Image (tube, rainbow, N blue to C red):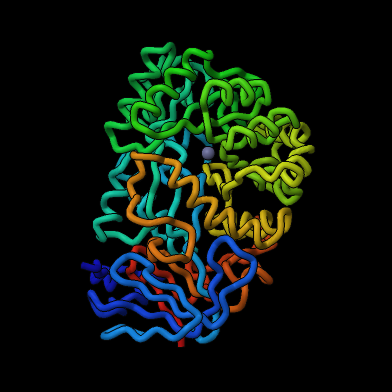
Length: 459
Ligand SMILES: [Zn+2]
């Protein structure tokens, strides 16, 4: 049975427009749409798409006669898969520095995460991969239909080492003592046994894969960027744990040497990796590993970042050296075409509403790599990574990120053609200087997730 969202009537937000627009349990037939299927540059012109319950059961350019179907005329617009952001932190939806985040409670974290989920869906993201800091509480609430939000793939608590990128304790605090560790957003572990325990604890709290900190990072204070975060044995322990759950390990990594050794040790998803060198890129592609770089860090517009206007701010020096060491990245990506997913990596420090950063990220990725590839990253390739979660995949009934028979009914209808104009999915060439906007993206006319319509402004 299809879920309904009667509670939205109470919501003073974008979703207030939703009023259970569909008849329960009737098939939905989308007509008069051009389909971008998430893969191919050629749209399927004048198509019809049939949704039964939460799945797409037919895509055809021939008319479909379906008894009792609710018909939705797309008005010649583009029907495409819901978007997938493969790197977010839903429990870190708060401006400021790490101590600001540490000075909070579960209540605030949960309330902010609920708002974040709602905003992601309003921007057309029907699936996100949470790259550590969250467990499955919000996911279950969303899946039950109590709150609007995307599907969520979870890494659980970040797994890092003492003085590493995940060690957010204040000076002098020992591991386990910081608020964020007590809240289990992050886990500081040293040695094989503690890595095993942390990984297993994450799975016990609903994680679908693991995330480890393999080198230093920008926003954290105790770790230089060049830090080699874990020993080989510790990395192997994480990989073994994930394999026990038929899943994978993703790594936070910036140093080419660490990226290279972790690939050899069985890590199959590379997050960040901006300083990757050519032989390692070659190895990553040969192994079929996924690549999830936070590309906006390298955009010239990132220099206007409000936090980076103060040279005494500790992460600023690291940010500048990272940019310097990453100049080869775009050319390497174009040469080797890794399996690259869309990564907005919103955490702290941004100083502008999340939606502005997201709008710019969409624009920047398309500017660098073209609309088709950018859209594939946000749809079918993100879906491939979701499927890579193996037997731990919480959404295994259909494919994600594609419009095809048997795929989940996660569907957008947008004005115009995003293959020609990326702005129609809400991209914006401005970032910190963008005009503030509300939660709604007017050119996204229809948002359906799991067969449920969350927005419909088709005439
Ligand atoms: Zn991140």
